[in-house]
Image 1: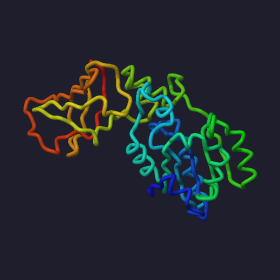
Image 2: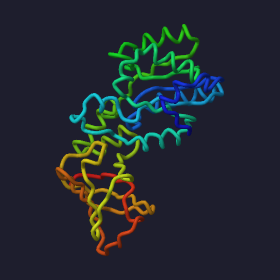
Image 3: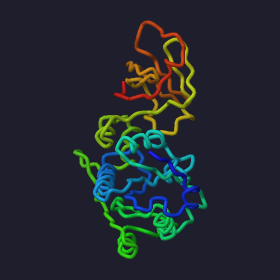
Length: 274
């Protein structure tokens, strides 16, 4: 999957002259609600014989706006990009949600996309808005599609079996409350904590990870059963103690593993609170 940075994109013209099928959003997860939108884009791309793309952000705009009060993302950028690539997307445009970008009007934003990646199909959620002070919504996009000659779909929201609206906010709340079953139901797969690029200190069978280095949502302080996915590909049962400052990951085996790069953790899957 090709990665295109917004600052590079705006210098291009007709990057995909045959047209492209896209969606736009933070896609924090991505979760089951996103799947309906992403599937519509991929289906349209196959039907029209054009590349499928995602327009997204390095980090959620919500995190930029909330600052230090933001509890964390559901997934890292690397996790999101991996999902998009696995699903079959051809390219992703990455945007830094800076103060300058936040002042761009929605009509200007779409004019850039039409000129650079030649939108032929666009799908977004039914509550989608964009642009300075959310000046562009679904009704505006319907009019723009008619004027500029592309197909547009607004996808209705999805609810879980518990009648919970499937959203990144609901997943964050479920993880924070240690309801990992609900988080899995909303995501469509288990909630993983990506620690691949975070410094880990290991002493015998205990890893220590600085909580401040984690950008994802974390459950409240406490003791949890989990699975650690090691960089070597091995999966082992662990106990994770979440404190105010650290994640202390204890291996549930009697024999300590000698320290080596292969014994560092790639990701953690939380199972339940003890």
